[in-house]
Structures are given as C-alpha cells and as structure tokens.
Image 1 (cartoon, rainbow, N blue to C red):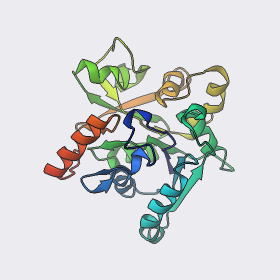
Image 2 (image 1 turned 90 degrees about the vertical axis):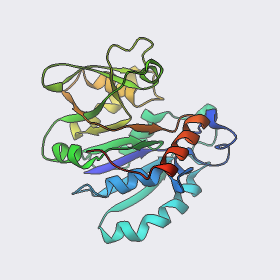
Image 3 (image 1 turned 90 degrees about the horizontal axis):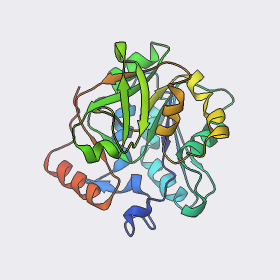
Image 4 (image 1 turned 180 degrees about the vertical axis):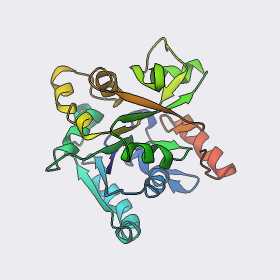
Length: 256
C-alpha cells in the first residue's frame, strides 16, 4: 500500500503568498500543511511508501521538507520520494490527473494507493478507513455531511445508494444533488488506478482529481465511508488564514 500526494499546482489564487513558495508547505499553526497529512498516514499499518509529485519551480522546497521526515520515516521502513514533473509555469501545468499518471508511470507495477491533494487538512482519523481498504478489495471515498451551499459548490459531492455505494460523483457542481461532500482523498485499488490512462485519453478535465472519480464510478464499485469531522481546505488566502487561526486556538484533534 502506498500514498500519492498531489502537490504540483501553482496556487495562483493565493498570490503573493505562493508566488515563490508551495501552498502545501505554508505553515498553519506553526507547521506545514502537508505535515498534518503525513502524520496521519504514518499511523496507517502496512504503508510502504509516500510519493509526492510537484513542479520544477517548487521541487527544491519539497526536497528540503523531505529531509525533515527522512530519519523518522526510515525508522519505520517506509520509502519517501519527491517527483519533479518538469513544469515551471502555471500556463503549462499538467493538472492533478496527469500528475497522477506521471507518478504511476514511475512504478513497474501498480499497488493500491491513497491519492490525496496536498492542500487539505483532514480533521478526522484516516486509520479506520485505511483498515477497511487494505483488508478489502473495493475503492473508498470519504463522505462528510455539509449544508453550506457555497461549500457544496466548491468540492466533490457524492450521491449514495444502498450500502453507501457511490451512484454518482460530482466535481464542484453548480447545483449540488446531495449534502455529502467528498474531499480530495481517495482510497483506490490497483484496478481503479489502471483506468487513469484511459480516462486521460477521452477527457480534457485534468485539473481536479474528482473528475476521475466521476468517471470511475461508472467502471467499478466505489463506496463512501461516512465520517464526522471537518476538512480545512487551503484554497484561498482567507481560508488559509482561517485555518491558521483555528488551529492556533484549538490544537489539531482528530474525530473518529
């Protein structure tokens, strides 16, 4: 089992903060955003490696960040690598899904993977979902109940059927069809990852990983795990400052 973290965006909406510095490494309550996710992943059993994809402009930033984790991760027998997709400017960015394909091409064979955006702080434990994933043979996404209409429009939405199977997945819909949001962290089996290249052949929607989930639910079963908690999405300067203020006042705590 591996984790693939998508960190190759240029975060132009957050200029000037991110003009020369990657959004996932901005500090929230004194720690890089990505540190919160790393800490959660390292609690998951049977994790073999963490693979981060970034762009040429920020590659050195992530290499320096990696050094702070190297010793701790090596003690656990986990591999960590940072991949440079070679892109230097936002206008030529690959998009999250082509970045995912770029990482998958680095492996001789595919393994089940947690695929996550590197700019979210997930305030709930990943371990129970991971346990279902590694001991099963289906794909999982997370479902969080949300009533704020604006927030529903800015994220992935799942429509659930019997046994919480995902009937439809909608990426940032104008008219959200349900109150269940699905943040950008997906637990994908090897067979699901094999669909990524085919998806890229037929779709021009490459920027958000949720577009692939829209496609995947028509190809093989995807189930939602309903969790309590919240996601801090670092998508704007305001949301970044709110997350920093929130976690500075209330220490990071996981909801089960």
